[in-house]
Length: 59
Image 1 (cartoon, one colour):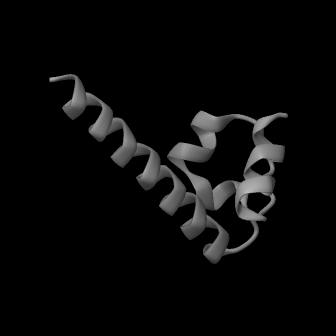
Image 2: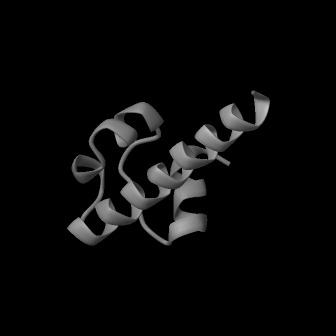
Image 3: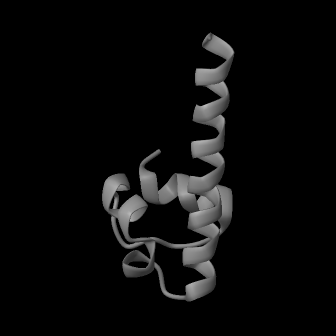
């Protein structure tokens, strides 16, 4: 499963690229609505929060 398919499966939105770094840096450019960009932003925030928890648990 590629990036586009995973995002569609998780969030039900279409993105126009498989480049995760580009989506991460500028989600508005790769979706059709501001609401979809907000969903991606929420997903990325969750990923960042999980990464912080992982670092804290290693200490």
